[in-house]
Length: 164
Image (cartoon, rainbow, N blue to C red; front, side, top):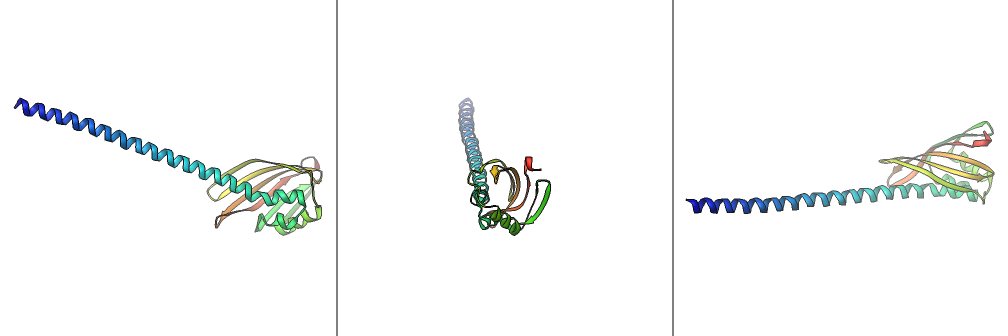
């Protein structure tokens, strides 16, 4: 009986040790999967920021070139642009704003900086600072939406700083 009991205890300890090792492997596998999911999520998030910065590029480039059609291509058809210059409030459609960019002409010395981008699913907001766009400093706030895999600007409000 003692031999059977000792054999049973030996098998139990061996099984427990094996189960614990397998449990650790399983736990480590879960940690590895979590790390992979986190890395994939981080990469996806990073890619979304890059996509939004890319979606803003036609608008940003239009500041330098004065190309109203290029500016217009960054916006949804329904987009609205609101802001003021010299105390006068402008409330424009994307087409009207494209015309204003065109009539303003090129600003070859314009500089810009994307100050921030904030994303929540298919919705995003961005702040872009411009210096010397036709001699004016602008802060633009954009609302963007991703539809069918493409980010476009849905609306923009802006401040012209010293020109207000």
